[in-house]
Length: 218
Ligand code: 6PG
Image (cartoon, rainbow, N blue to C red):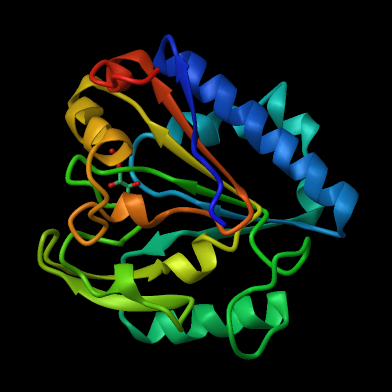
């Protein structure tokens, strides 16, 4: 049963990044207490750059045992051969040669960070694409006309098996789409961010006030 999304509205972009850093450190601590490693998928795009800069410096950097952190990108701008290679690495790491990841520490991503495009895409799950409906593979490659390039992306199978998924959304330009995704009709083919509904993990939307400005339920 998918868990209900938690929406945390932070007053500013800076407060959003601090809250995201705290979530990252908390998720890493929990994972390292439950298993030998913390396996995280990072979002691309511009929004999380400030988060990554925070995590790379004091005080946040000293709060994570980076020697036990395994970092992946949630999506990449590379040829399609990389998709199969990435899936092999993940299946070796999470152990099941076939089927979805198991819902247990060490057998899935502990944390997946995602952004949201103003067209409702996330990772490289784009509107009208086939990756949003993938039910077997963990990583797929797709030619995305909207950005005129091949993309490789984690699929809903592996994202929704994660222990925790956190969206980071900032800026007034995202407000109309954030309202559609969070409060509008369920239409994941048009709004792929809606396909993210962790099976038993936590789903958080960390958003700043400008991005949340159109939300009715806050
Ligand atoms: C990418 C990301 C993509 C991104 C959104 C939001 O590689 O670009 O995977 O899904 O998170 O496009 O990007 P911004 O944070 O730049 O708005």
